[in-house]
Image 1 (cartoon, rainbow, N blue to C red):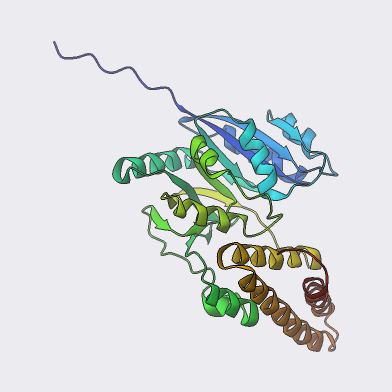
Image 2: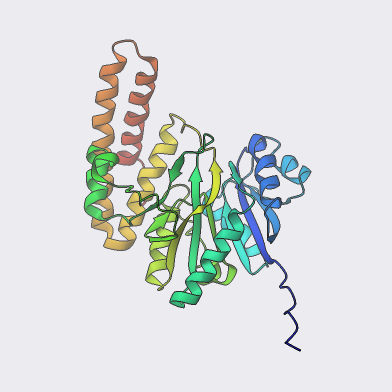
Length: 312
């Protein structure tokens, strides 16, 4: 008689950490989609960044464990709280406005395990993020160079390939970085990296994470067959949000190339925002209210970055 069939292995356990801020309208579908994952055992932890709506109640209502913070720590800082509270072998960090395909987590874990078998290295893996219409909106990107960063701040990111996409191949692909909207890795890999740098309140925390991942000798892998809807939405015309992004770029480059590089980046950011303010003001003079709002945003962001303390 042949050897008996091996006993089936239990499904892999994943703690899915959702960072929430005023996400009452999104959390129900996000949590339910994660609990609907096939082939994995999922526990959802929602870390709420001091929301002013009923986010915490909405998350509890669909079975998530909720950690309520007493202040807004930003995306990376809140994600770190969830990672510290997790205990499953795998951990996912997710935006609140996602819906995961039932097979997405399983495909991501398969890709991470395949990377370990073939390269003997750990990886953070990410799905193909699609919009509500199913069109691909995020793939993988190259890590930025200082030259492209400066050119993008001065003249516009799209003209200089700041977010160059990979091909839409169906196979997993190595890349420099992926959006932090949905990331999966072994929990001990998250721990070895120290999670996100909480000094980034918003923006660039994902690029910083993957730069440190590569420096530690591990990989970033984009898995297009794993599909996750990212509702995203149009960013608000808000000078505070925009200036956070500029200060985060300053922090990133100062940490890697020194204080002079950080000052060079913020100078380019101020110059670029000032030029955009003039352009939008000219359009606003023709009666376009949205153009006037953009002109005000760029003008205020330039002033804050030039004259207010912050960053490096």
